[in-house]
Length: 114
Length: 114
Image (cartoon, rainbow over the protein chains, first blue to last red):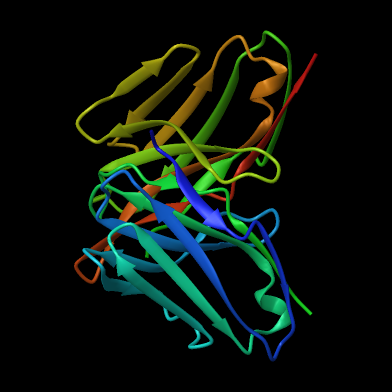
């Protein structure tokens, strides 16, 4: 089983709202990722967690705050977003962080900021 | 940084024909090259990958070839079916600051006409 689940599927939020995206995997993977994908573009890496510790932050604005409460869960806390932050947010996991490990993606959360 | 070029951006074939998508990369240290299929409204799905110590890998109707000297790799789909219609992304590893991450090509929209 290579399933990564994400909730919610869709989210509409105002620029003053606070919301959270959730991601879960039960494959025993120790690396988890957040990607952002705009329409007709490839996924862009935002954050990497390795053994529940943040290992890569791709200079993401502080209005995006990741959290990894345990090895199976990954959250992305959102606050004071801008309309240009509207995108598909993808979570992925792999056995370990780094190149030669297969990354499995979830279905994504479609975020609209109004 | 790593640059992954992918061609063509769109590809239309008749059912039963073959489809070939090509990618080039710039980082000679890249050692892992996955291919993802993304259907509308879904997350990217890993369909095949190849590591730098192998020149070719095949899985039923899908094959990937890698030429490390020329820094290019290709996806081959034979006997295409309408359900192969999707956006396909190639990716390559990039080592930066002691961490490895995936960098994606811009994608190829494949349409298989019945």
